[in-house]
Amino acid sequence: MINRARLKNHELLAVILWELTFNGWTEEQCNDSMQMLKEKLDEARKDIKAGRCIVLPKKGEKGFNIVIPDSVRDSFKTES
Image (cartoon, rainbow, N blue to C red):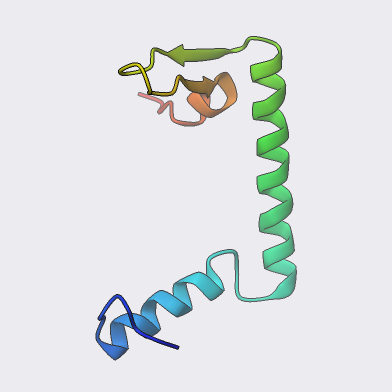
């Protein structure tokens, strides 16, 4: 492996471990995490298709519209 980021060895190891364990330490944890992500993506797609979303205007001529499904927006709400 070539360390193009020029990280110190312990920093590089931390990045590698983060990537390897982001979804869990075991195959079962990884599968559960991926299943949950797929379910959330499906829910977001359904929200967008049904028009349950916020569309932010694009910036500039070459910008992109940002679409935030209601299910995503609601996940950021906090109870007061």
